[in-house]
Image 1 (cartoon, rainbow, N blue to C red):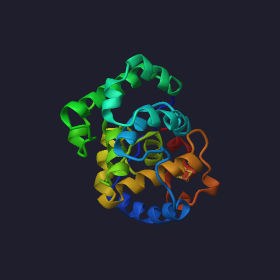
Image 2: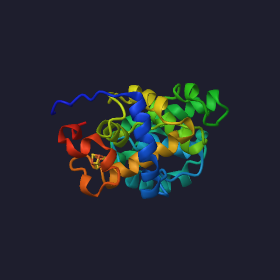
Image 3: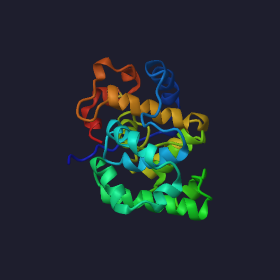
Image 4: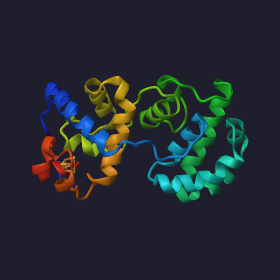
Length: 226
Ligand code: SF4
Protein backbone atom coordinates (compact mmCIF):
# COMPACT_ATOMS: atom_id res chain seq x y z
CA UNK A 1 0.00 0.00 0.00
CA UNK A 2 1.32 3.45 -0.81
CA UNK A 3 2.67 5.43 2.10
CA UNK A 4 0.25 7.96 3.44
CA UNK A 5 1.22 11.59 3.20
CA UNK A 6 1.04 13.09 6.70
CA UNK A 7 -0.75 16.37 7.01
CA UNK A 8 -0.27 18.97 9.68
CA UNK A 9 -3.54 20.03 11.20
CA UNK A 10 -4.24 23.34 12.91
CA UNK A 11 -7.44 22.86 14.90
CA UNK A 12 -8.60 26.46 14.54
CA UNK A 13 -8.08 26.34 10.77
CA UNK A 14 -10.01 23.09 10.65
CA UNK A 15 -12.91 24.61 12.59
CA UNK A 16 -13.05 27.40 10.03
CA UNK A 17 -12.91 24.87 7.18
CA UNK A 18 -15.76 22.88 8.67
CA UNK A 19 -17.84 26.06 8.97
CA UNK A 20 -17.37 26.52 5.22
CA UNK A 21 -17.98 22.95 4.08
CA UNK A 22 -20.93 22.28 6.42
CA UNK A 23 -23.49 24.36 4.46
CA UNK A 24 -22.14 23.04 1.16
CA UNK A 25 -22.58 19.44 2.27
CA UNK A 26 -26.06 20.13 3.63
CA UNK A 27 -27.04 21.73 0.34
CA UNK A 28 -25.60 18.83 -1.69
CA UNK A 29 -27.25 16.11 0.43
CA UNK A 30 -30.33 17.60 2.10
CA UNK A 31 -31.78 14.14 2.77
CA UNK A 32 -28.61 12.40 3.92
CA UNK A 33 -29.45 9.70 6.38
CA UNK A 34 -28.48 6.17 7.24
CA UNK A 35 -29.07 3.70 4.40
CA UNK A 36 -29.74 0.68 6.66
CA UNK A 37 -33.44 -0.10 7.13
CA UNK A 38 -34.65 -0.47 10.72
CA UNK A 39 -37.63 0.35 12.90
CA UNK A 40 -36.10 0.04 16.36
CA UNK A 41 -32.68 0.09 18.10
CA UNK A 42 -32.40 -3.73 18.05
CA UNK A 43 -32.84 -3.89 14.29
CA UNK A 44 -30.28 -1.14 13.77
CA UNK A 45 -27.82 -2.86 16.09
CA UNK A 46 -28.13 -6.12 14.15
CA UNK A 47 -27.99 -4.42 10.76
CA UNK A 48 -24.88 -2.52 11.79
CA UNK A 49 -23.15 -5.71 12.93
CA UNK A 50 -24.07 -7.28 9.57
CA UNK A 51 -22.83 -4.28 7.59
CA UNK A 52 -19.15 -4.92 8.38
CA UNK A 53 -17.44 -5.63 5.04
CA UNK A 54 -20.84 -5.72 3.33
CA UNK A 55 -22.95 -3.22 1.40
CA UNK A 56 -26.00 -1.65 3.03
CA UNK A 57 -28.07 -2.83 0.05
CA UNK A 58 -27.16 -6.45 0.72
CA UNK A 59 -27.80 -6.07 4.47
CA UNK A 60 -31.26 -4.61 3.77
CA UNK A 61 -32.09 -7.52 1.48
CA UNK A 62 -31.12 -10.01 4.19
CA UNK A 63 -32.85 -8.22 7.07
CA UNK A 64 -36.10 -7.76 5.13
CA UNK A 65 -36.97 -11.38 5.91
CA UNK A 66 -34.93 -11.80 9.08
CA UNK A 67 -36.68 -9.07 11.03
CA UNK A 68 -40.03 -10.71 10.36
CA UNK A 69 -38.79 -13.94 11.90
CA UNK A 70 -36.73 -12.61 14.81
CA UNK A 71 -38.47 -9.67 16.43
CA UNK A 72 -37.10 -9.43 19.95
CA UNK A 73 -33.70 -9.89 21.58
CA UNK A 74 -34.99 -13.14 23.13
CA UNK A 75 -35.77 -14.53 19.65
CA UNK A 76 -32.12 -14.06 18.63
CA UNK A 77 -30.77 -15.22 21.98
CA UNK A 78 -32.74 -18.47 21.81
CA UNK A 79 -32.22 -19.11 18.09
CA UNK A 80 -30.03 -21.93 16.88
CA UNK A 81 -26.61 -20.52 15.98
CA UNK A 82 -26.43 -22.55 12.77
CA UNK A 83 -29.76 -21.13 11.66
CA UNK A 84 -28.54 -17.57 12.20
CA UNK A 85 -25.33 -18.39 10.34
CA UNK A 86 -27.29 -19.62 7.33
CA UNK A 87 -29.60 -16.62 7.41
CA UNK A 88 -26.72 -14.09 7.37
CA UNK A 89 -24.29 -16.11 5.22
CA UNK A 90 -24.54 -13.80 2.19
CA UNK A 91 -23.28 -10.80 4.20
CA UNK A 92 -19.85 -12.41 4.61
CA UNK A 93 -17.94 -13.31 7.80
CA UNK A 94 -21.20 -15.01 8.71
CA UNK A 95 -19.90 -17.21 11.53
CA UNK A 96 -18.50 -14.27 13.48
CA UNK A 97 -21.52 -12.12 12.75
CA UNK A 98 -23.95 -14.83 13.86
CA UNK A 99 -21.97 -15.43 17.03
CA UNK A 100 -21.86 -11.71 17.82
CA UNK A 101 -25.57 -11.20 17.15
CA UNK A 102 -26.55 -14.13 19.36
CA UNK A 103 -24.04 -13.05 22.02
CA UNK A 104 -25.14 -9.42 21.98
CA UNK A 105 -28.82 -10.37 22.22
CA UNK A 106 -28.14 -12.83 25.04
CA UNK A 107 -26.42 -10.06 27.00
CA UNK A 108 -29.26 -7.63 26.21
CA UNK A 109 -31.75 -10.15 27.60
CA UNK A 110 -29.68 -11.01 30.67
CA UNK A 111 -28.42 -7.55 31.62
CA UNK A 112 -30.65 -4.95 29.99
CA UNK A 113 -34.13 -6.39 30.33
CA UNK A 114 -34.32 -7.18 26.62
CA UNK A 115 -33.75 -3.56 25.54
CA UNK A 116 -30.73 -2.23 23.66
CA UNK A 117 -28.87 0.06 26.08
CA UNK A 118 -28.48 3.72 25.14
CA UNK A 119 -25.04 4.60 26.47
CA UNK A 120 -21.65 4.14 24.83
CA UNK A 121 -20.32 2.43 27.94
CA UNK A 122 -23.08 -0.21 27.97
CA UNK A 123 -23.14 -0.73 24.21
CA UNK A 124 -19.42 -1.49 24.26
CA UNK A 125 -20.06 -4.44 26.60
CA UNK A 126 -22.00 -6.22 23.81
CA UNK A 127 -20.08 -8.76 21.72
CA UNK A 128 -19.22 -7.44 18.27
CA UNK A 129 -19.94 -3.83 19.18
CA UNK A 130 -17.13 -1.31 18.84
CA UNK A 131 -17.31 2.47 18.92
CA UNK A 132 -18.37 2.69 15.26
CA UNK A 133 -21.41 0.47 15.78
CA UNK A 134 -22.21 2.08 19.13
CA UNK A 135 -22.09 5.61 17.66
CA UNK A 136 -24.31 4.51 14.81
CA UNK A 137 -26.91 3.08 17.20
CA UNK A 138 -26.72 6.08 19.53
CA UNK A 139 -27.01 8.61 16.71
CA UNK A 140 -29.60 6.97 14.50
CA UNK A 141 -31.73 4.93 16.88
CA UNK A 142 -31.61 7.07 20.02
CA UNK A 143 -30.93 10.56 18.65
CA UNK A 144 -27.84 10.88 20.87
CA UNK A 145 -25.05 12.56 18.86
CA UNK A 146 -22.39 10.15 17.62
CA UNK A 147 -19.59 10.31 15.07
CA UNK A 148 -19.45 7.15 12.99
CA UNK A 149 -15.91 6.72 11.66
CA UNK A 150 -16.46 4.35 8.76
CA UNK A 151 -14.21 4.01 5.73
CA UNK A 152 -15.72 7.10 4.04
CA UNK A 153 -15.39 9.34 7.11
CA UNK A 154 -11.78 8.21 7.57
CA UNK A 155 -10.88 8.82 3.91
CA UNK A 156 -12.63 12.18 3.59
CA UNK A 157 -11.31 13.48 6.89
CA UNK A 158 -7.80 12.84 5.57
CA UNK A 159 -8.40 14.44 2.20
CA UNK A 160 -10.17 17.44 3.67
CA UNK A 161 -7.36 17.87 6.20
CA UNK A 162 -9.64 17.54 9.23
CA UNK A 163 -7.31 15.26 11.20
CA UNK A 164 -3.85 13.76 11.06
CA UNK A 165 -5.27 10.48 12.33
CA UNK A 166 -6.69 7.63 10.28
CA UNK A 167 -7.17 5.39 13.32
CA UNK A 168 -10.96 5.47 13.75
CA UNK A 169 -10.98 6.02 17.51
CA UNK A 170 -8.37 8.81 17.42
CA UNK A 171 -10.17 10.36 14.46
CA UNK A 172 -13.50 10.22 16.29
CA UNK A 173 -12.03 12.14 19.22
CA UNK A 174 -10.38 14.67 16.88
CA UNK A 175 -13.66 15.31 15.05
CA UNK A 176 -15.56 15.50 18.33
CA UNK A 177 -13.35 18.44 19.32
CA UNK A 178 -13.93 20.41 16.15
CA UNK A 179 -17.48 19.55 15.06
CA UNK A 180 -20.29 20.94 17.25
CA UNK A 181 -21.80 18.05 19.21
CA UNK A 182 -25.33 18.64 17.93
CA UNK A 183 -24.03 18.02 14.39
CA UNK A 184 -22.03 14.82 15.00
CA UNK A 185 -24.54 12.35 13.54
CA UNK A 186 -25.47 14.52 10.55
CA UNK A 187 -21.84 15.32 9.84
CA UNK A 188 -21.08 11.60 9.62
CA UNK A 189 -23.97 11.02 7.21
CA UNK A 190 -22.95 13.95 5.03
CA UNK A 191 -19.35 12.74 4.73
CA UNK A 192 -20.54 9.19 4.01
CA UNK A 193 -22.86 10.44 1.24
CA UNK A 194 -20.11 12.59 -0.22
CA UNK A 195 -17.72 9.64 -0.12
CA UNK A 196 -20.21 7.44 -1.94
CA UNK A 197 -21.14 10.02 -4.57
CA UNK A 198 -18.15 12.25 -5.35
CA UNK A 199 -15.10 11.68 -3.18
CA UNK A 200 -14.75 8.01 -4.04
CA UNK A 201 -11.85 5.92 -2.84
CA UNK A 202 -10.03 5.31 -6.13
CA UNK A 203 -10.85 8.44 -8.07
CA UNK A 204 -12.42 11.42 -6.36
CA UNK A 205 -14.29 13.68 -8.77
CA UNK A 206 -12.62 16.90 -7.61
CA UNK A 207 -13.71 18.78 -10.74
CA UNK A 208 -17.34 18.43 -9.78
CA UNK A 209 -16.90 18.64 -6.03
CA UNK A 210 -18.60 21.54 -4.26
CA UNK A 211 -15.95 21.39 -1.52
CA UNK A 212 -12.95 21.69 -3.85
CA UNK A 213 -12.26 25.33 -2.97
CA UNK A 214 -11.72 24.35 0.67
CA UNK A 215 -10.09 20.95 0.18
CA UNK A 216 -6.30 20.48 0.51
CA UNK A 217 -6.49 17.28 -1.57
CA UNK A 218 -8.19 18.95 -4.54
CA UNK A 219 -4.81 19.89 -5.97
CA UNK A 220 -2.63 17.37 -4.21
CA UNK A 221 -3.16 13.78 -5.29
CA UNK A 222 -0.82 12.51 -2.58
CA UNK A 223 -3.56 13.31 -0.11
CA UNK A 224 -5.95 10.89 -1.88
CA UNK A 225 -4.09 7.94 -0.50
CA UNK A 226 -5.76 7.33 2.78
S1 SF4 B 1 -12.04 18.17 -3.73
FE1 SF4 B 1 -11.65 16.04 -4.31
S2 SF4 B 1 -10.54 15.16 -2.61
FE2 SF4 B 1 -11.50 17.04 -1.86
S3 SF4 B 1 -13.49 16.40 -1.00
FE3 SF4 B 1 -13.83 16.97 -3.13
S4 SF4 B 1 -13.66 15.06 -4.31
FE4 SF4 B 1 -12.72 14.73 -2.28
